[in-house]
Length: 421
Image (tube, rainbow, N blue to C red; front, side):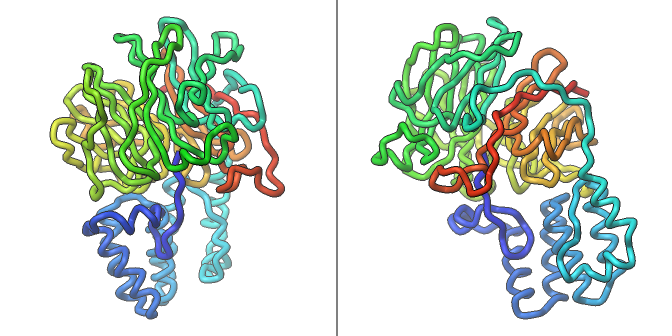
């Protein structure tokens, strides 16, 4: 899950996070661009935004900010080229901003292409429907030995199991075991473990108000669902949304709110910080590759690589026409990273081909998008050559107090199925 706000200028980052972290070069330029825009210095705003673009390649909000500055500077042709890059990313925008009136009028083909990018694509089927409209699904993983999917509910604070025929039944109850609501989860088949991220949320009416802000990770016996232990994260106000397990049994936990990554070494008694605040903005889905590296989807920066021994962070490079931001759940299968993008328009499931060393995304393709069926997708897993994912989690249908938003129409979450590349 990613609870994000929008910076005034361009980059979609959590304001509360950015204020707490040590500034890096792209943040300095982002702030300078915003200040220049506010004082009407569009030439400086453009120069700084281009620096952000060179450091965070392929972010559509940055491309829009560049186009806006170019319009103010009277360079319509350059603005059209910047917006064309957004179209090349496969994203959609109706250019409703009054600053783009001339472009809408003189470039109907661009406007049409941006609109056409919202059309459904890919071949998605429905593998299962979860049991209630207000379920709020988040995490999903596959237990191969027992041939079942495991899915978390934010609203109920439980993990349910889904069999091969799509039948749903209860498996574990985090609230009953001293946890809170349920987010990401990960299976360790070798050691028979099920790990579930948990945190207090107002969406779950079963939780004590006095636990507000508390977070942790729950460990269960994978076969029977027997509760083993809870490992708390330090402090309050964290967001352990995504988990992944290394071949050696180490557990990695992404804190999307504070921008940190924790590790629980196999056999250890407590979580420790692997990546401190600073290099990352909002880490989400993660996967361990075979070279001692953790591949992580940062909601702003896109995929990054983290050295599991040192915590060093390196951006995974990609084309400036591949929008790889806004990824929530992400998994690694061979040389393919597969991610669920709920932070771009339209929401979609994408596959990113990596080079042999997993240092660069060589190509990216959309596996599925559908503005009706795929709305607020969250996490994903694989069964053989199929990707199964939460197609409509439903978190956005509720306000910050956990109440259904006025006018919201709740739909039971569905598990979508698409084929791997």
